[in-house]
Length: 104
Image 1 (spheres, one colour):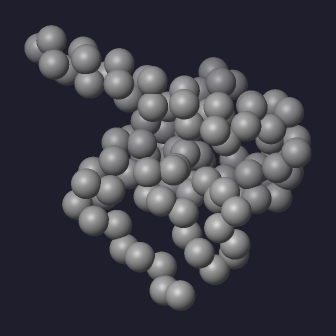
Image 2 (cartoon, rainbow, N blue to C red; image 1 turned 120 degrees about the horizontal axis):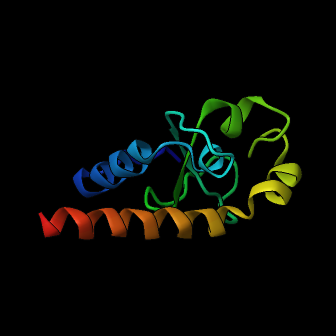
């Protein structure tokens, strides 16, 4: 099954999430640009989950370091929490941004 390309609303959400920066680096007190990580929940390797179930992670925390979602998931969860916990944190922060923008 081919991966579905994101529609306009999904692309806008993905842009907001990516512009947030790496959530793991934020916890470490750093600011680094992020790429999108799709949270897989029983979808299998060939199927991509919703474009709304995503996290902003730098390349190291996403896929290249020993403490990353793809290479060191157990260590990642121990240090930063589950993907769902981090997703909730990102959603709350983006909602706060939107409230601040609406004020101005």
